[in-house]
Length: 536
Image (cartoon, rainbow, N blue to C red):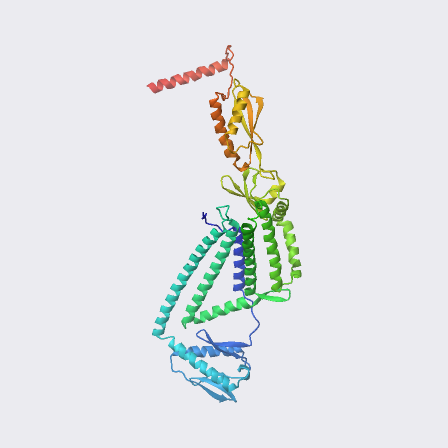
């Protein structure tokens, strides 16, 4: 049976996600300014035609700005276009509608080409770009492009919904596969990690999909193409420029995101492998749940630790350079993270010493239940009311813990019973033993025992001692036994006494002082006057 429930994102994972997104946005909005470029692009309607270099006293950026402005003015004027080449000072000069546009210099040419060849190529590119700009400003083109943009938005919205539907059904199928054969409730820890991973993947795909759609649509129209070009340039610069240097290697935001994704994937892989180890390998040899959990915890964290070291080495990070970070982390553990370190150390002690194991029935303070999961920092206890209690690991070592299942699950239960003083103690003993023999969950070896405890104030107090192999059902067992005991005592006419209280009264004279007599007289007079007024 599949147990369907909605998982909530754990607060610690949510905080980590918010911190990562904030860091990424900060780096994106504040990209590192690259060194001054030696070339500048010539742009028309957001499309780069070619790049030019410095020339004499004019920088590349100044030359590109003048050319871009003149091309824009020609498009807005909506006149005929004529682009030609003239020789001026032995250099090819490009004219636009008989007006000077630019001079091709040696710095502008591509290696392997002459000045004239470069000028011819640029003239052809300028003519094609101007013709395309005029075409894109016609009414027919704008109507067709608007229809295409609307269709693309509709398809993108449908595809985004389809991704959410696929994620929902994939998660439900994965939940069914992660349901262990002995438990109808899926293991929540792998499911939480899987759900977080699917949400991150889905959010990333949707974000990339909508950003690509917006950029594509803005690139269709000549009026918005400049925005698309600027946004694309910012994105490419932000994600490819080095922002961090570790050791001798600079890293861009793209490389850091890939590294974070690989580390996160390592955690997912470790969780999947350990779940397979628990449900498919350790399940068959008949190893108890406590030993399985200890093996799984050691294997999972060992795999994550070794995998992280391997990834960092492959990525080019020198592990020895992280000693400063480790020193700072140790200081942080000593001051701000001491509770976490204490719970983590207690978790290791619990894993190796195994005073409690998964599946044990324990009492921790006011909480009573079955140990469902043992983590590195805390332990989950499911009470008899099916309420999960998260208990820090240090509490199991600092305070007394009752483990009904430790080593030998067979436990003895105490049931106090009181009968009337007129009852025969031997008959009471036989009745209690008869009641114990009628319940199938009461062990006959060791055999039940009846103790005559004391002569109470109102009853003869006995205690029935029974043994059970299922201590987690002791409350139901006690209730069933009390039902049977009441029935057997009624059949044998053994009275269960009520609580009694003897009150002795002594006769004598009651005397009042003169002050009390006066007070009583005044009280009676007031009562009489009130009665008369009410009758009138």
